[in-house]
Length: 89
Image (cartoon, rainbow, N blue to C red; front, side):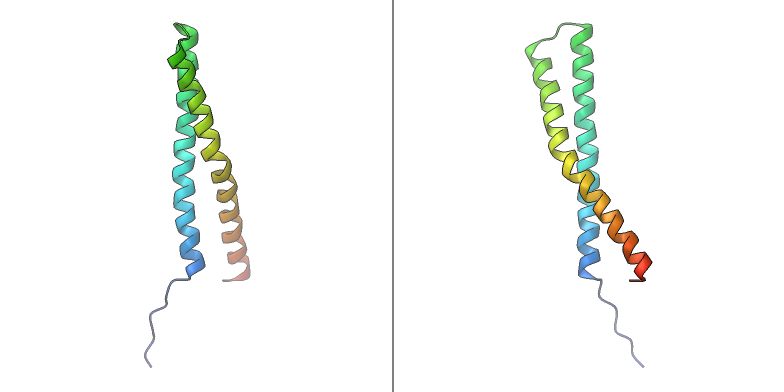
């Protein structure tokens, strides 16, 4: 009896790819928030220049744009994996 190698499930493959991208977006988003916090702290300690304001604003905007969908997708992927385990898939 010959067994054919199982092809990976395209849904799981796609899900793992999305998980990788959401992890990257989370890291970059939180890093952007960190840059914003550091910029504001530097502005409060020294002088709050327009460059500091732009850095703080850009950090908040980039972090928000990346984190909102990444967090939602991350929870969706975890939920789908959990449901697959429960259903034995």
